[in-house]
Length: 444
Image 1: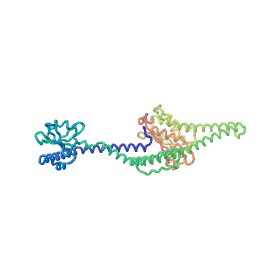
Image 2 (image 1 turned 45 degrees about the vertical axis):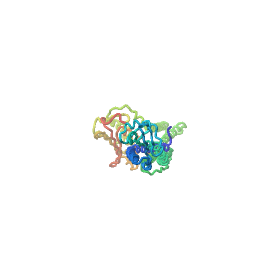
Image 3 (image 1 turned 30 degrees about the horizontal axis):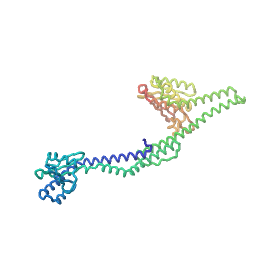
Image 4 (image 1 turned 135 degrees about the vertical axis):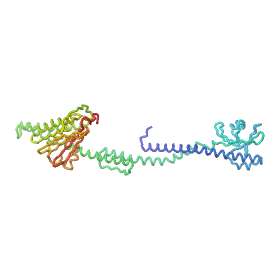
């Protein structure tokens, strides 16, 4: 069953890890020390066997000396002729499996301590003749020293004692995550004044700092979007009010100008309104259109610029437009319609702000074609110059615009760039587009 609580999951994982470590450590210690214990056991068994053997030879029946040999090892005399067993130091019970194997073991005596597994029990054995048919046999059951159940019990005990510590560690890890969860919900509800009290410098602390930066970015975007919608609403409402006012005058027959002049005003305002609506719709669908645009083609920027400058010159003949093309056949790869819109919006901006002249220049720069567009209009304020390509930015004069934002998005999509600066009393836009051979058509 999947645990939904991170704290419980961490607690269980830590407990299991501690249990595994305790078991592995205990078993490893047992196996590592087992060889040393066996060597010690063999040495002691040999020593006690010799003590008992010497005692029986020098002073048979003297059990006080034999008792000093230690109670961990058992000794008995085996008569090979009649099979009689005589325990030394009391009536110790000799295991039946060992009794059944005595004759075979005596016949295979190697004169030293041997390891024997009889049944399921492991023994250390030492045998020495003490007469024609009698043998002193000393043995110990080594399984008595290797109690795995004790090891498991100790591992479980260590695990139980570590549970409170594991719980404390789990709570310490999960606590800041719970704070992050609550903070994220507050940000989702646009509670921009909420604070996050995490001061650590680790990964969680860095995540908290990133979430604070995200909140600030979302707050700014929310404020700009709200201001933008307010401005758009005002921009759309104004031509609608003008249209409704003049239309009502025509209906009532109470108008100052002729019906033709009123109709012309209505048409102009409707055209302005249509343009704003199209711009908003175009901007909202631009990301999808660019990502799904597959009709790429190769065309020439110099021809595109010549066409656009000619059209804008016809729109406002009072402006002096100059076009300088330092190269011919400036090939570029992409959607001709989209790139035309990006240039068109920048040139249209010149109509609004230029006083007398607009200069358009096309230049070559290694992998890029560079387009410079200068006008002699008022300089852009330092407050606005770094933000005019943002879609939701409101300028210091209160104006909103989507044209430059649309241009920037298209240019950046095709691997180019657009900048603006005040230079020598002029406003200079600088656009770069990759040359045809340097643009991957699959780039997104």
